[in-house]
Amino acid sequence: MQAPKHGLAAGEQPDSPDWTIDQGWARYTAAEHATWKTLFERQTRLLPGRACDEFVQGMRELPIGATQIPDFRALSEVLMRRTGWQVVAVPGLVPDEVFFEHLAHRRFPAGNFIRRPEQLDYLEEPDVFHDVFGHVPMLMNPAIADFIQAYGQGGLRAQQLGHLKHLARLYWYTIEFGLLQQRGGLRLFGAGIASSFTESKFCLADASPNRIGLTLERVMRTNYRIDDFQETYFVIRDLDALLEFTRIDFAPLYERVQALPEFQPGDVREGDVVFTRGSGAYHAAKRAEERAEERAEVRANERAAEPVGPGRGTA
Ligand SMILES: [Fe+2]
Image: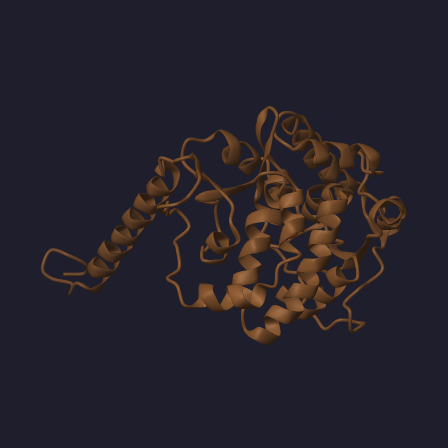
């Protein structure tokens, strides 16, 4: 069964121009709180030794627990005192310019719905678990808080300049799927991996993906996967490295990147700082599987198109 869509993906019309709604906390059902609890408990067990210190610290200081879906007002109170951010409820995905406008004003738009129990492992749309568990702890960090605000401002500008694709790759490979160097080795800080049961393990431990030092130009030239684990994870030195990006004028960089060839998600290029050269085995197996399915489909279509001859059908 097709899962219901939300927000922009459902073709919804917003009640207000900024798409915000009441979180409707009192309306969550016991079953929805139970889904949160399942997700929260299994993910919390996974994160020691995988999530960066800042994530763990942020989580510890926020009113986020296992028993119930967090109340955005309570989250915002703590966040506001720490970094001047707040969490606002939206019905699901919102248009780019609405998203950027919120970020530019230190408001993090979070989906108020929670995935269904049969979608625990994979969900196309960001729900309250991804948005709150994945993103909000990092918003307690001053460097991330400033970087995401600057990303919102930069997003509005990149739209005007026609370079949203390039900027969006930076967000993808940092805020959603970024890794960080820490004392004990690589740690995750991206929300897409922090909130994923399977990818939080894959991104750090699997032999398949590449792990490469992040530079602005490299990520802006690199396509990404939205439908599966990443083929490459980019690594930053520390969170202040993101802050340094906010002091750079991206316009000349966009021009340069535009004139250069793009990289595919699994590429390793000369000049890359390679932490791990991935085997590519996971995605190679996936591609082989897809090719086999395609061949089977072609054969089935050919058989269906064959004329019914003697000895077959209703002879
Ligand atoms: Fe996200």
